[in-house]
Image (cartoon, rainbow, N blue to C red; front, side, top):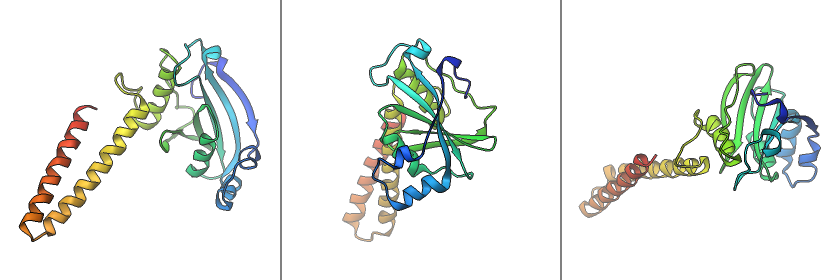
Length: 206
């Protein structure tokens, strides 16, 4: 699967009950396991002993988990639950018919686009297992093999901060347009200017 080395292949099916049977889940989430997912299969285990790639400081193993779906919809809440309950880094390969949609857990579940199963492959950064995870997650989230200066978690956190600043800027500018009191209008203008400065600093550092 995904063009990964044959030495990483596992092919071990895991009953859905193994997840929701021992975890505290809501009735709706338990229903999603039943209604949305056909089965889970550990397709690949990417680690030093199966690839020869040096161990990492943060990451020691990446499991590729195939999630066979019953419909063309990815149950993100289920994936998040499974990822949080597992000590390893997980790459979800959500399959439906001949399509696949990859997903990884960072601060939240991040899901890529639908692709043909036959045309989907991953490039592994062989510097270390840390690099492997960063390259895999970056390919899912950003469509590239990773940054030389930031981990994928740092990039993801920076994007979240950037979005929060832009949202706040939009609110401040909207309030500034409506404000009639001069002192308050000037204060909002100054706040908007500072937000723009922070946004520019982050964008320059990306």
